[in-house]
Amino acid sequence: MFFSLAWLSLTLSLGVWWWILGFRQAKTISEISVSLERQFELNRVNRMLQLEGSFFLSMLTLGGVTLAVLSYRDHKRSKLIADFFSTVTHEMKTPIASLQLQVEVLLEDTKDLQLKRKLEKIWKENLRIESQMGNAFYLASLMQGEALYLETLTLQEIKDSYSHHEPDLVWEVSIPLTKKVYLDKKAFFAMLKNLTENAKRHGKANQIKLHIVQEKDRICFLLEDNGSGFMGNKKYLTQPFLRHSNTSGSGIGLYIVKKLIEKMKGKIEFPDSSYGFQVKLCVSEVV
Picture 1: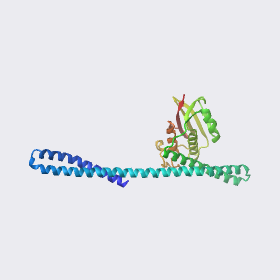
Picture 2: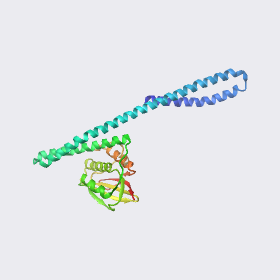
Picture 3: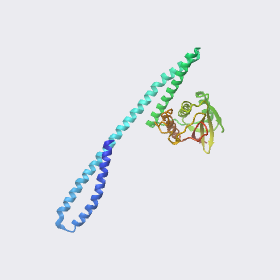
Picture 4: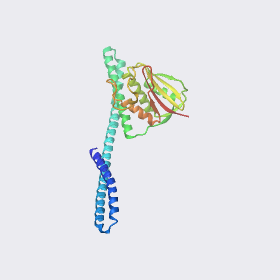
């Protein structure tokens, strides 16, 4: 970065110098051309222009090569980080799922209330880790520019499938469930899960509703909770690593939701609400 800035400063300085020199030399050449006796002076000026021009072009070339090398190194570093995230998330999925299953079995079998409370805490923490690993996976995918698997789904298919993931979610559908949307099912479910977990963890919500409404040629999924809401500036909500309070998260979740919905040609909005918090995900309807 330092060499790039130094090269840029030098290039700008040389550019300004050549701009000033051009006017001066034009005047000098016009004066020299009227007298053949000053031919030596004209040759000297010509050599000076050639040398300075060569130096200027050399610096441009050197600067361009430097920027290209630095950009290549940055690309390799970004790819290495993305590959690391992808590998770690894939490797961690199996043990996390196995641990989750074992804890659920123990919860069903145990009669000890104290032990059950401890197991429930482990179960919740494991769910949180699973969610964070999912965020890391999608973040790595976004960094690598991987494409989503987009397909046409009916609202009924989406409702039936996601109800198994989150049975406590209250559905309020004001349009026919036969309507179709074009999205990545797995990514869309991850987005909904991310938003509902944010509402429970950071907003302390105990009830979340999902309204499905029609807005012109778009179908919108409006998540509404009864939590504490958000008191800050909503336009900064999707910026990563920006904490709005001591209890807020890293912002990665909403950033990923925004990028994923944009890949589905959709949009995320944060409508004003008199209570709780609302998030609206809109995608195009498939006719």
